[in-house]
Length: 162
Image (tube, rainbow, N blue to C red; front, side, top):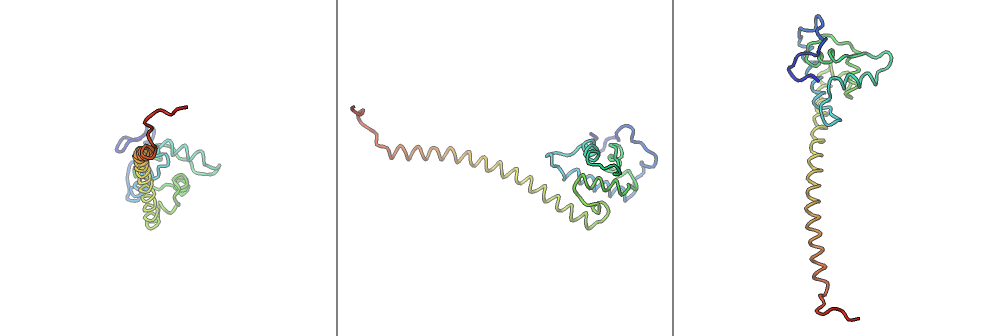
C-alpha cells in the first residue's frame, strides 16, 4: 500500500502524468475523501483492494484500472481520466459519477459520507458504553436481588427436625 506523500508504486511513471493541473488535484482530493470516509472494513481500503474490487465487478466492456493509475488519480497527478474510469470508481465507492465532476453533488455526497462515518463512530462508542453499563448494572442487580432474598428468608435458629 502506498502511504501519504510516498513515491508512486513501481512502474507508474507514465509520460504526462507528472504534471498536476487544478482539475487533477481537485479530483485527487475527492478520491482521497472516498478512501477516508468509505470504510466498510473499518479501515481504509488499500489501492490494491480497490483495483481488485473493480476487476471483480467489471463487465466485459468496463474500464480497467491499475494500482499505478489509481495512485496517480488519488494524488492529483493524472489528468483527464476517462468517464469509464470515473464510473468504475464511483461504482466501487458507491457514489454517483457526478460526484467527481459536479461541486454540488460532491458537497451533498461528502456531507452524507461524513454523517455516516460519525454515526458509525458514535454507534461503536454507544455500544461500548451500553456494554459497560450492563456489566455494572448486572453486578449491582445481582447484589440487590441477593440482599432482598436474604432479608426475606427467615434464618432458622435450629436445624430442622425430621
